[in-house]
Length: 148
Image 1 (tube, helix red, strand yellow):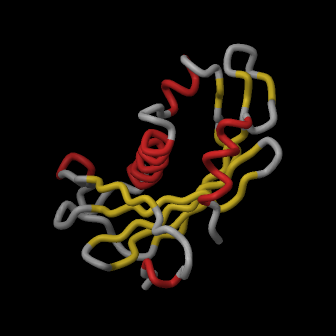
Image 2: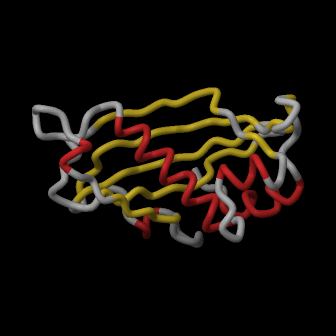
């Protein structure tokens, strides 16, 4: 199991807590598979909010004219997610390219890894839906937080 001490000399990743509810579950009494990417994306949005003075995807798009459409999502499911415990999603940027950013999300319940994933989006000029380089103000926030 991953621990905060596994990455020495770096700040711990941001952790977003999700309350999984009965309505998130399927007849097998575990979270419906389609909800797991939603939980991960909610955690990434919370990461943006925590690191950009409260600005998440909505504010990036409307107030800063920065779009971040996803071009790749990859997830591995390790253990069922249930309403029994809070879902703790550790989020950090893994890579910042010229025009893209990749986030890692590791989700645990009660100390057990439930899913892990990689999520890549590209930067666009939102109102023109045109590719752009990572804006300097975003790069300044993200670069010090990149970890493997």
